[in-house]
Image (cartoon, rainbow, N blue to C red; front, top):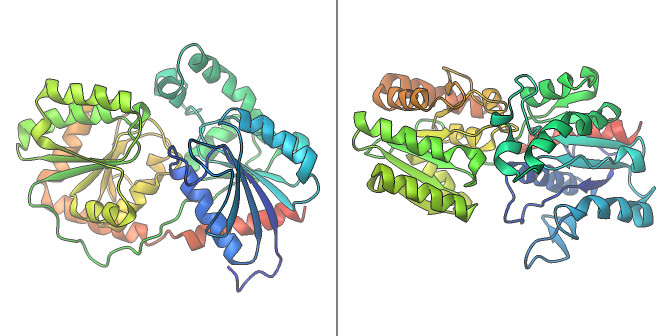
Length: 386
C-alpha cells in the first residue's frame, strides 16, 4: 500500500469501542488493523471512542492516536460536540463505525467527506423476524422491540453516505433499506496469521471448539444442547469454549451443563492470547459458531487458516465466510438437531473432514489485513477528494 500511494489522508474515526475495550470484538479488530496500517503508510488517524473502567483518556496504540470520552451512549453526543468545537475542517475524511450501536449521523455535521463502515445490522432485512435479531438477545426490556422497529428509519441515514460493508449479507440488508448499490462497497475482514501448508495433527479425542465472546446472541445454549445429542453417538467428544463475556449468562450455561451431565465433556479456557488461540484452533477438529448473526466472521477464517472447518447456522455473515459443503457446513437457524447431526457427520466421516479442512486452508489464503487495508484506503481516497 505504501508503494502505491503518496497522497496522505487525515482521517477521523468515530467508533463506540476501541481494540482495548473489554467488550471489543471483531468490529474493533477490523478497524484497528486498517488504521494501524494507514498510520504505518504515513496517513494521520485520530480515533475517538468511549471510555471504560481504568482506561486512559488518551493513548497511542500501534501509532493510532486514541481519545476516550464518556460511555457507549454519551459518545455519540460528545462526537458531535468535539467535531463542532475542535475538529471542523481539520480532517480530509470522517469515518463512522457502525456495529451494534446507533448511526453517528456524521453526514449532518461533518458534510460530504464522510463514510460509514457497517459491520452488521441488528436484524436480517431479508427475513423479518424479531426472534433472530440481535436486538432480541442483546438489548433488555421495551428498548429491544423499539430498536427493532426503529432500525430501518435510523439506518436510512446511510442513503446520504458512502458505505463500506464487511460482507455481501450486510450489503443486501442495506440495499433492502433503499441504498443505491453503487454507494455500498464490500471489503472483507483480513487475517494476521499465515495459513498452514497442510492439515495439522488434531487431538486424539474428537474435539469441537467455540472461540468468541460468551453472550446470548452467540448461541452457546444451542451448542451445549447439541453437544448432548452428539455425545449419544460419539461418547468421547470434547467441547472447548474460549472467550470472555457475560458472567450471568455463563452461570446459566453452567447450570445447563450440570443438568445435561456434560461437565466431563467441556473445558473452559476463558480469554486466550493470540498464540494460545492459534494452538487451540489447530488442534480442534471443528469450530462450531452458532451465532444469531455476524458481520463477517473473522474467527471462521482464522480457524480455516489453521486447517479447521466450521459449522454454523445459515445466517448473515456466516453464510458469507463459510462456503457450505466446501469449507464447512451451514444448517437452518435455531435447528439444534440439525446442528448436532452436522457435527456428528463431520466428526465421523474422516474423508469429508479432510476435504473440508484442505479447502478451508485454500479459502483462508485469499484474505489478509494488507489486502483489506489497501481496498479500504482506495475508497477513503475517493471520499476525501470528492
